[in-house]
Image (tube, rainbow, N blue to C red; front, side, top):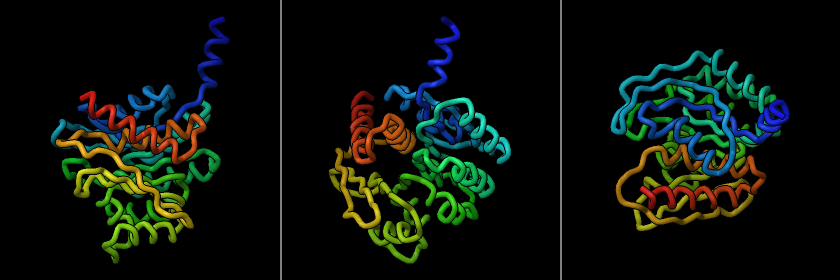
Length: 252
C-alpha cells in the first residue's frame, strides 16, 4: 500500500519552478510554491539564486552555478510528471543559456516566463548582458512571457516608447505571447494586456489597490502556470490568476 501511494504521488502533475529564494518569504520561490498549492498543483524546484532580503531591500545576492541550475532542472524533469514550467529570476547570461538549452529538449511542456530584471526595491537581479540572450534565445521558447511595463521597455530594442509597438516588436522577434502587466501605469483600473501574433490585444481589467504587495509578479506567473498544468487554456488561466491575485489582496 505504501509503495502504491508513493507511485501515485510521483505521477501527479507538477510545475517546475526555476527561480531564486527570498529570505523574507515575500517573493521568489516561496510565493511560487504557495500559489501552486492554492491551485492544487505540486511544485518541484531548480534554485537559481539565494538572496538576503527584507520586505524593503535586497541586501545580498548569491547566484547558483549554471551547472547546478541545469542539473536541478534535469533531475526534476526526470523525477516528476512536469506539466508546466514557471521561470522567474535567472540572474546571469550563462544561466539563461543553460535554461534555454534544457527547454529545447522539452518543447511540449508549456512555459511561463516572468522576466525578473530588478527587485521591487530597485536592485538589479539580471545582468545587462543577459537581457539580449533572454530576448533572443529564451523568450521564443516560452508559451507566455509576463513583463511589467519597465521590463517590456528593457526587453524591446528601446527605439519605441509605445507599449503596443514594443509588444509587436517582440512578437515579430519570435516571442509567442506576451502578457504586459499594467501595475506601473496610472488610472483606477489595473489593466493587463495579452498580445499574440495575428490576434487583437485582449485586455484583462482588475481593481487597482492602494499600497504595495510584494511578489505579485511571481504569484501571477505561477497561477497561470498552474492553470496550464491543469489543462486550462491560456485565456482561462490568465483570468483565474487575476482573480486569485485580487482575492489575495483583499485577504491581506
